[in-house]
Amino acid sequence: EQAGKGEYDHFMLKEIYEQPTALAQALEGRIDPENGRIALENFEPGTFADISSVQFVACGTSYHAALYGSLALKQAGVQSTALLANEYSVSAPPIGDDTLVVAVTQSGETADTLNAMRHAKAEGASTVTVTNVVGSTAAREADEALFIRAGPEIGVAATKTFSSQAVMLTLLGQRIAADLQGEVPANLESLLPELEAMPDSLEALLEQSDAEAIAERYENSQSYFFIGRGLGFPVALEGALKFKEITYEHAEGFASGELKHGPLALVTPDTPVFAVFNGVEDEKTLKNAEEAQTRGAPVVAVCPDGHRAVDIADAHLAIPETEPDLAGLLANVQLQLVSYYAADLLDRPIDKPRNLAKSVTVE
Ligand code: AGP
Image (cartoon, rainbow, N blue to C red; front, side, top):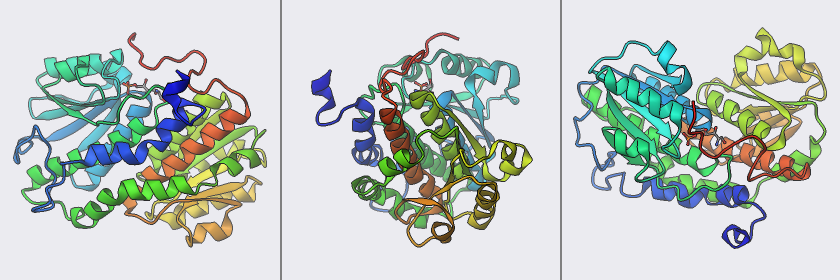
């Protein structure tokens, strides 16, 4: 097992550092150099032309990637929802033969997600799974499978698969929007070069991260809060999930604007607030963060150098400049590192947190 970790103390850290490669693999051959369009192996242009709505189903970290994909698709003008797979049997919106259900599952074996996909299929929906495992149950049972090609992920805490899922869903969303609207979505032109630059941006981030120092600085805090807006919201949820599962400390993620609707009551000087900025209504997120800061909470801004939030925050985790649609994915990697180093300081069994399994094959 130690050999498999190479120079790293834990698989989780190794897998965090594998993300530039994982993303390059996810993107490879999927952007047509001729015309700059998204080319997904199983889907001819026009495949999704008759779809009227898209439902994403997933659990845990994969649900956060699904929420990311769903919000991105909505921004591209397509009706879409992300649903927790374990709630799907009781809360699924209407399903018809013009519904596309996308099951997002790293392992392809999560019982809740498989059950949701089977339910959708029985109701007549078309199904696609976005998964890491060729030959998995999800890949065999879905009408079509898109593989994220992240390579094996051993750490129970999902890291590189989240980033790869989110990128894969961005590509899929662009293809769905193009088919439905009969033209390439307006934001693709600016998005494409930044998508292709993601492996390099991540490499730069990983070469110089202050995450370890931040983890040390806020060690012994009472609770850890994560806030974000738009595509930063699923990143805040994911930041909190990662933090709680490997540190065993209390952490929660909120939509930035929700802080004032209740959670602010929990804010004290012992509750650092990690604020994700992605270039969308950042002034509002900054105001929300300042409201916490006024109550004594230290604010850690996750944003590019030179961003206004850096002057106001108590600490800064830098991300490279990119498109708003991708900034959250870079921020997420900084948050993965903070969780990792915080758990390491507490001497937690990082790769195998108590009570958790890599894939949950029971309902
Ligand atoms: C998070 O770190 C976990 N590994 C967990 O939330 C996981 O994402 C969830 O159980 C779903 O697993 P899947 O992607 O294999 O379906």
